[in-house]
Length: 315
Image 1 (tube, rainbow, N blue to C red):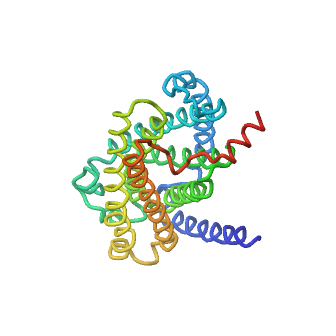
Image 2: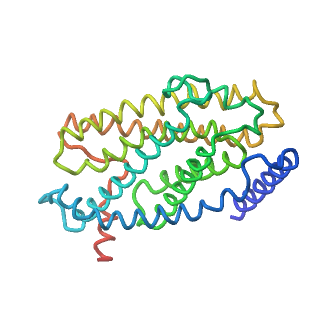
Image 3: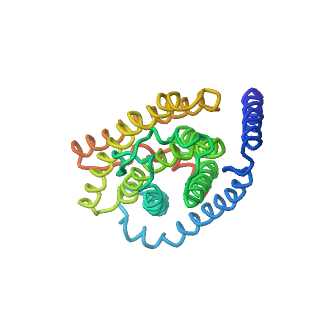
């Protein structure tokens, strides 16, 4: 159907009109369209870096994951690739979380629940949408946009996995929310979303990297860290503070005419919360399964036998 295409064109046209109106009101204000030019280069660099890292890290992954008798050579190779990719992503999110927190730790919009001393209400003050933000925040944000586009491309380039559609939905939401929020000056709120997601994803991918190894006590620590950070940041802080700010505080502090894209912003965040709750249920299920069987499994992206059979035929 052409309906999604026409809808996207209509949204893009309205977005362009809003940006032009803001440029007329304050020509020197950020952001500018050309700020997004480096995103393509960042996305391509991230994509190439991940492919290279997976290849270079393969010997380490092979040593980390001893072959089990029940695994075929194909299954073992896929597990090594997943481990290498998870190490790359864990390193990325650890770096981005430290970088992001360093940028915003003294800013007025970082609330105490995220380690600051400010309030989420400041996301909508200081002359929104013409706020003055640190230049380093712009670089951080563009890097995050580029990475999310590279992740969306990776999902499309890889062979489909059982979690293909939910991951594609997640990356589509992430790409649209980050780029949309940057162009419309929702950067303060967006930086908080990136920060709490990054802090959780460190443990998500650390657990994925270790799930097939023999380092059970390290895996147990990362899993406990995953449950705590996921429950705190994504199930508690995200809806209670971030979504509340986007829905309530924005209307209290800013004229409705200034809140362009407010409906989509809140709708997309509701979709993200739904994915959070679904994935948190899987995380808890993994722990219960381990308690019963003593085996830790990645239920979210577990490779199906059909998929493995396809990979065998290709090889």
